Image (cartoon, rainbow, N blue to C red):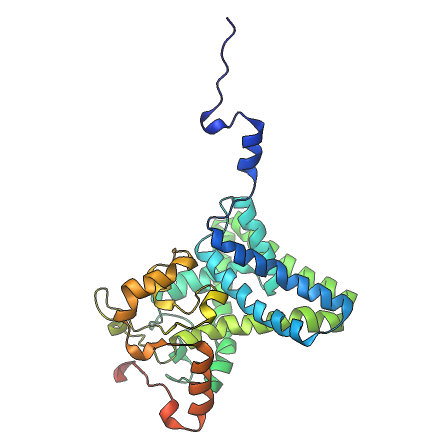
Length: 316
């Protein structure tokens, strides 16, 4: 009797199964929304490059640059795909769309911001620049101030990678090559269109990405009293409005800090079940846009609309 050939466990011996296993697989179905944004932004830019500027499409494109920043953030905390190659391809695609290497979230956000949670060692803490403020000028300047102190952090991190993990260093350099190469190519094709349809929207998205730190932490408590393991958690501001479904629950910031590896679709349940009651009511806002209008616009002329700092006076 000829020997019976057994397939490996899981049916891997069947070619059809092997092909299916090799197909890209999302970790969460909700990330079809992320994929839609990742495709829609370049599609809108390409359409306008060919057919000309369209106000509504351009406005939608600017909004999508905000979404790309949040997707970048989420993909850093929890990789979108189950396969390494697909995740790396997504890193490079985000780099192309955002106009900056995607690796920067590791040293700036994971190793710095999440480690210190707006505390005195957080390199880009909002109260580092001109005191503990929360106003329009602070919001507009914070991305420039943060970039000024974060880029030396990136360079030190890259130097350590070069010494200890040369493969990871080369991968980061590849992201720089992809980004700068894309700019060079598009500028060579048509510098006016490149600026209008690619570079300016990317800069808009990067400004929002860095300014979000100001929205979420200005006037929050960055001292140890704002980060009590079993008590109050007043180091971040939450936004509970309608932008959350459109921007991947980016407003539910306390739950995200406490569960950095939770998928964004889980944050609403975590926020209401575990963290909302532990946050000072002043830090649980409704909509983001009403908040900005109230604090940054009305608050610039009417003191009663300004937020109040929760930082202890001795730490200002």
